[in-house]
Image (cartoon, rainbow, N blue to C red):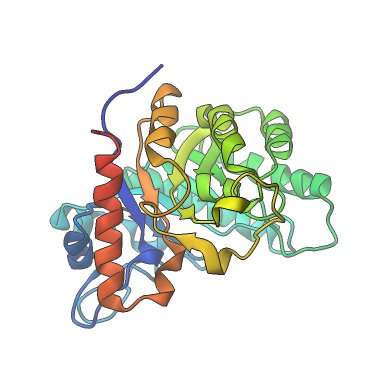
Length: 295
């Protein structure tokens, strides 16, 4: 069902630079953003929820305390981010980690948990990586069936930006709670020509449970070519208001697919900027995404 309400802009906490004496929450206010994606490490730590004293005291062990602080700060978590690897020798631990994270998301009122299908096990073929992922994720879905929290595979890396691979994975799992953390920048990174990108996003949008929003600015003569995967990304990645991807069109596609969650900024170029420039750029990107929904 088509949605029409403006999509809220959120940001990955890993992309927010917290100055000494400030907190993640005060920095979010400076960015004029009140919703964020929460990084959770495999040991349960939440290292980017930094407080004024420089500490990061929250983890999967004290989610209730984090919820209280979020309420006090009038800030919301839209999703949790995990770097799962179900093809590694830590697969069982990662299944437990993901299960605990879904429970935490439920407590925090977050809609989704971003998960990964990538693996450091380079011996596995794409088909074997899919089999390992399915073995790891099915117990998570079963153990958390009483929650309304979705799991969103990020199309990320060489394997899961392949639409055929993704579809085969969804078919193998067969649970509607498994969808996508749809990263439009990663699809472009994979080498898809710009003109074919929107049809691809349209085909994937019904699976979107969460998003990562970023862009790339290739030279004009390269935009419509089939580029090698990741071609000079460090050189050409760009703010969403200065990249090639038409974000107004992306939002329209998401609306048409019934998506009603956030547009989560993942501005990976920020490392080249000063702390002050990072704040100004992220604020400008958020304003741009809001404006793209009203113009």
